[in-house]
Length: 602
Image (cartoon, rainbow, N blue to C red; front, side, top):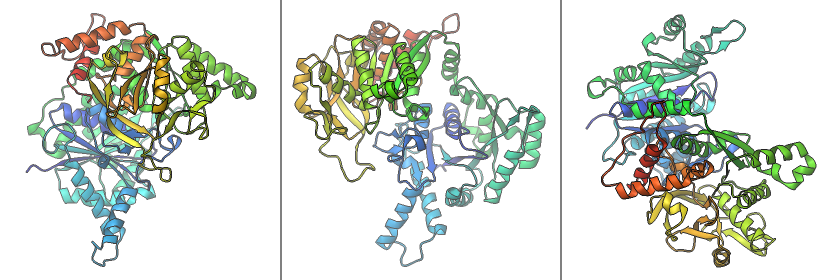
């Protein structure tokens, strides 16, 4: 049996250097060279998973098909590599300690004193080896290479057991099977304009003191490294100059794999892993075209994201990516207007009139509105006002999870005249509960107790916009993360007032998709379509939103349905290019539609 190859990505000097994007780009480069790739993210925090962490602390919680609530970097892996990971691909200190303590309670250690070394370090290594063998690309058998990203920064006290375990692991798997790429910072001081190598020197020295020696340096800087800087780093860090890569600032992150390719990063990795005989030059033609298209787009489409955590864009990272995928497919430059939901509320008009006016000015100037998911009652009234504004002014609207529930509450209040209509999450004693707690949920434990992961939605209205956008399929599988749902006892009354529930679960009792048929685009979904959006394969509902915001929805629906009819005889391989260098939106949309019709997103 072939031996698994491992690529470890670590970070030094400061956090936020882009280890996740670097690891994803390395994975893409290896995949484009003909290798099968899987990924593991190590997060040294004690939480069992990311599910209970505040977005302000950790950015968005990314949800996997199996219901795993994981670090947002796994979203980057899935988008770049077009794979489906599992909750096991995200290792945390909490998971490792729980695993070891459960074994201790069962008596598996036969009376031994359980210690960090060897028991915790052994558990880490065993976890990596086991998960690396799980196929994530839909094919049989294990991958060729496992890319491992170690979260945090070298020197963090919580990372020490993982550093020790990975040092042992590199010896255990042997030379030629382990490649360490260290992402570090080479700052440029404005005073002298000189690239300073000392922070990276110290970071590498710290890494080597802990038992790990980097094979490749990936240096973050505002500009490409000078040759003399590379020579200096090579001399002081004991890394060949050919193995020192510059990750300088680029217009969009789709250029990062191209940066790595152009600097022969793949050849350096192949050399360390003894892989040159079974690999080829990376094939990134379609990826290159997409990156260049994104740079050249100039006609804007403005989308307002009305949310609770607008001060931190990582909170809505997957939504941003899904909007970007859709806007590129439609040939438009995405402009996001962040609207704090609470700033739209009447109380803000009294307490902070400037913020109130600014929020409403932004909302009224946008081409489309997204109300994303969230928990808690802060900003809920502002979201309801945003949904009302979009409904009454015929502005394209996409409500996700809570955003769907908000749309239902607003409709009940404004159209049905139920002024006290609400969710029991915000008002447990409401006399008009439009949204209720799911019967299978837990009210005592928060972690992992929601309705999570991939669930099936069946279309109930054949002529709806949502079913057309999904290529007239009878059902779809999308990822969920919620505790509350639309009250089934209210559905008939809402539908009699022309609010259409076009998608439901297998029981017909759980509402999944809601639409206003006579609105240009007013859709709410209980699931999170952003988690399955990919570059070149935009989410159907985000594609519909952007198209509607540009006044091109009818053309997109024709392309999707036309692709459905021709799916057996026509496959469009990659975006076509106009003479002026732009891709044809029609062909990109047809590519995406082909993917839906063949079940890529199911």
